[in-house]
Amino acid sequence: MARAIKVLNLTYRYPDGTIGLNDVGFEVKEGETMVIIGANGTGKSTLFMNLMGILEGDGYIEILGSKLNNMNLKNIRREMGMIFQNPDDQLFCTTVMDDVSFGPINLGWGKNEVIAASQKALAMVGLEDYETRTSHHLSFGEKKRAAIATVLSMNPKILLLDEPTSGLDPRSASKFINILYTLKSQGKTLLIVTHDIFLAQEIADRVLVFSEDKHPVAVGNYKDILNNYDLLLKNNLIHEHRHRHADVVHEHEHQHGHSHKH
Amino acid sequence: MKCTDSLLERLDPRSKIISFLAIIFCMISTPITRLKDFGLYFLVILTMAFVSRIKPAQLFKRGVVLIPFVLFIAMFVPFLKEGHVLWSVKIYAWTFSVTYEGVWTFLNIVVKSSLSILLIVIASSTTTFSDFLKGLDLLRIPQLLIMLMSFMYRYIFVLLDEAKRLMRARSLRYFGHRYKEQFRVIGYMIGVLFIRTFERAERVYSAMIIRGFSGKTISVNYLKLSRLDFLFMAGTFISLICIVSGLIYKIEHSKISDTHLWHGL
Image (cartoon, rainbow over all chains, first blue to last red; front, side):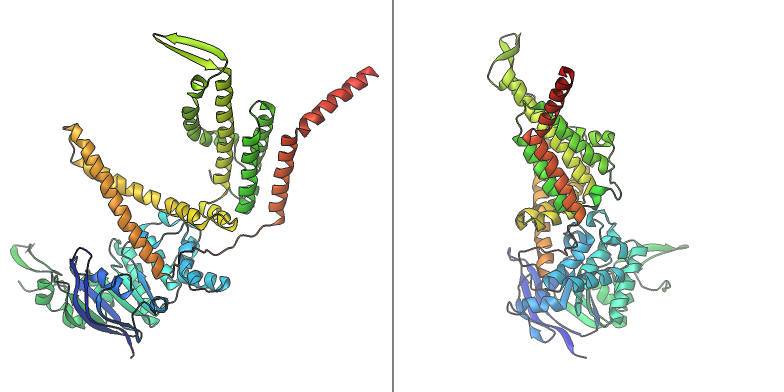
């Protein structure tokens, strides 16, 4: 499988000097789903901003075989879409259709092509009848789905999703995960940022763990990573707490299975 | 008050914008002393409300929301405008005088603004905001202005929600003491709201450039001027010409003359 994303020695500092990313390096293959997990403020969203060329750090970024630079930024953005954590940032037009068609229009597609791609994207996220709806009047779950449609309409090969299930109720989260499964089955490369390890368990081929010093500390098969409790505990992805099973009160870290030793 | 499938709803927003602006322009140009003309403008507006299936009660109910603002602006004019004194009252050392010129100016502001507000009510009831913006775009109104209106409409509620959350957070920790300090707190809240808005603007702009934005917003144009639009515009313009040229008075006058002639015979 060809390489979709390659990042080498990427470091980013915010204008005030705070480190956003510290010597980040990883690779993602085409068609692969990589979930990046890390506690709050570990630089996951900053990494996405760097991959999209919004922020410019020091290091090497390669997208679909081309080095990311100002010359080919537009071409790379044609192939890679990003879905923001807060859908209100992504849905800036007055109607859902205007938002979904914004990307294809700016890509210079013809009117019929734009309409067909937008309708297809809306159908894919189950919002067929929402074309004329105002974005502000949608529920949070609907906004999240509309936000993904705004990117799907451009038919990108790579999708970056920033905290896709945060703030969603279980049913909306489940709908969203189904959309991710569909995208995965279509061969899209998915890069998902989350601190929800259950989402990682559901969808990931590989998991990349970010430590609190903004540096990737582990990458590998989701089973190996998610069963490494020491690693998860050390990187603030699970926590120890006291709890009670009948008469037994004891302390242990959260585990993914329902049963554990007392 | 959204109407369903009324004549005005089926029209292209461009024809409505052009017609309504023409009416407003004619109203503004008509001297207030020609009060009968304003009665005729009112009739034209009522006819439009009728074909939009907006009941007069609904029309006035929505209009009344805005009219107090106009009254507030205009209420001081009769006292401030210099001219022939119509009525005056003395309260202690102050003398308040209402002038003829002031009353006419007051009427000028109130009548024209109220009729314009009624037109806005009809327009907003029969056109969605996005269609209105598309109409403006097709009429070659500057893009920057349209983008500003679009963002304002999209984010005003988001900002209001954010402001409400800040107010709620404050009220949960405020127990009614040290009220003077609350002004400082409100100042902080305004500052926080500004910073959050600025940060949101940056994120929105990022979302735009990621999707290929290069300074110009384009949307799918599905609007098309039909025969009905041209008929509507023609009807509006003919009505306006009749009112402005005083043709209706002439017809009325000639009828009276004919009656006199008949009696004479």
